[in-house]
Image (cartoon, rainbow, N blue to C red):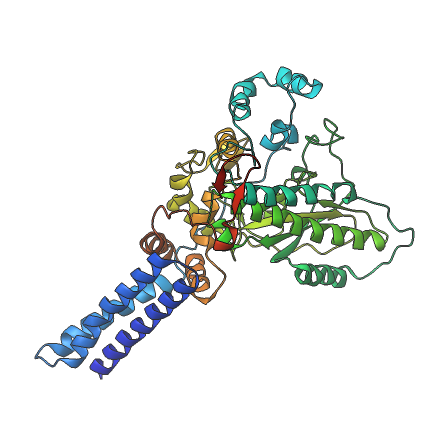
Length: 460
């Protein structure tokens, strides 16, 4: 009987690893294919050989092998060490949008805003001069410059910029009142139909809001929103595009998903105003809220080592959209996920590959009274201006960023379930995909030969 069980276990291992190889092939992961095939050849051997070859101690050896296998499997499957309770990480105050890198990037030297900002914050001037000395995001002369992909990304950013005047609007005089539970369900299901990957509701809290507007015509004005609720959602960023980080396709994908987020948010906000309630869409370049904090409190994920929202489905490989409103909604009951924080504490893969060394290798530290990871945003942004894209290397190598399919979802479930599994998952991700996975080549359809009129041919 033991011999039959051993052969069955060997066959099961072989089948599982061949399946992993097939999935990896479909995902264009050649290293993972090779490593899966190697394990498929080696791991079943002891079970099959011991099951087929008779010798005096066969029952004892087989029993020991099967018992050890069962113990290892149980150790990784049993819900042990889910991560413990999370410390209170509620921010103690608001963030001034004028201090974020995008706001500082658009300050024009010699302008009144420029002079007043650095007069108030002279400590930031030296670091900001470093990124201003670079060619700039999507600029010629940057390390990843490519006329085709950069032009495509620019087109998308310009497109979403055209929608900024429509984030708010006139509210219908007639109020259409619905049961909060039913209208909440409608908004969620419709949001998914519009393209949202995940969607949640939270009460709008004071620390969700920026303290001061940092961009646009309302620069310098205090942020005030007469809203009690926020609808937060995510959209997926394409894995193939992100894997080319830090090359042009990542900027293309980032810009495209800002558009998708923006259009979903604009539609939901306009819908709510048609019902007679106030609503504002928060889109790229026209935010009044800190989207990752809103999304976290709406139950869409946790804030990881790289400072991005880590979703259960795709890790950081998402963009976030938010709509705030006074329409009565039912907030989601949020269960925080300490396993994500535990995983990020031990993984550190994003920190290792970060070209600017902007991501900390250390444990979370207290920043403004809150325990969290603090990235070096100046170093990160300076690299963006040097390379020409919004990089995304951290996003591309994160073990959570693998596609949403059966294979990776089983791994994600194990990560949530067991601290032992989390440790093993980190090692296995390095084994199958590499500790520092290489940047993927541009897809063939993006390799367009270009020519500057009157100049030399240059390949993209």
